[in-house]
Image (cartoon, rainbow, N blue to C red; front, side, top):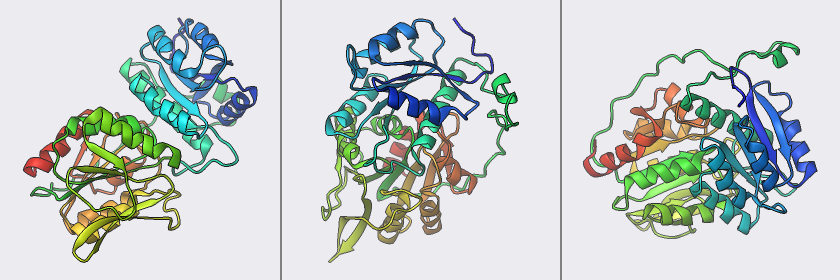
Amino acid sequence: MASSGAGPFRVMLVDDSAVIRGLLARALKDEHTIEVTASVGDGMAAVERAKRGDIEVVVLDIEMPRMDGIEALPLLLAIDKDLQIVMASTLTQRNAEISIKALALGAKDYLPKPSSSREMIGPADFNSELIARIKGFGQQRRRRKSEPLPSQTARAQTEAPKPSFSRPAPAPVSLRPAATGVPEVIAIGSSTGGPQALFEVLKSMGPNIRQPIFITQHMPATFTKILAEHIKTRTGLNAAEAIDGEPVVGGRVYVAPGNYHMVVKVKDGAKSVELNQAPPENFCRPSVDPMLRSLVEVYRGRITVAILTGMGHDGRDGCQGVVAAGGQVIGQDEASSVVWGMPGAVANAGLCAAILPLGEIGAKLKNIATTGR
């Protein structure tokens, strides 16, 4: 079995289209922290290749001949339970369902494959999303196995000098005093790596939360309805994709639909959900910031927000308003985040009352929702 040393993350691309594999490889070729170690055309070949034991991250297509991605997934994990598998699929209803189902079977995330009709899925383009996932999940694997992260490799040194991917320890961030009292609403923002994070957080919160919960996850329209259905199945919470004009009720989880901002309005004393297609914010629609701004207008400081793994800084400005109104923000820590962009932005801005590992956030939100602490 190959030793990782401090070399680049070793990736296997699995897709029946040589064109797509070429596109993925080109997207990665200038990243000295990533090496395409294998490129194969179906799940059966992927399983055979994985037996060499030198693959860390797999980008796995769903629809392939001989053996598709959902069939290959458990076989790959049986070979190496620590394989970091990202499902890649076109934006169809069937593939959205399979992609989210794959998360329950051990995949780490999904990635819509690029096409001319593809919508933006987050605060960056396809290449950035692909690279972020590989780096993020590669880091998580190596940290779990106490293996070094990539540094200046021989491959990189033959080119123009580049900074090491290994970073010095960040300066400590300052925490704000926690707000007191039970909040009236809970909001969650997430992006890259978010689906798995949401499942874990919401399952830990349990089905008896009385507050409404609003979630903005950067996702295409095809996926958000399926995500909400899986949240309901896996957590017992009353979750569904938000509907324009529906009333806000306690104990309900509202998931922002892809390509729509989700906000809360008050009319004739009654709170309701409003969906709109105002311009993207932070390159995103849905965006966390408009959701949080509207919640501050309606609930003032009686808000608790969790910002989970994701690229960019969506949610930072909205959290500034939450804190200014007297609410509080919980951020996911860097070690457990796939990408410490969104939670890092609120943490480094000094907006967090707590910065916690993913496994502790659900219990913390439950305590705040029930006891105010």
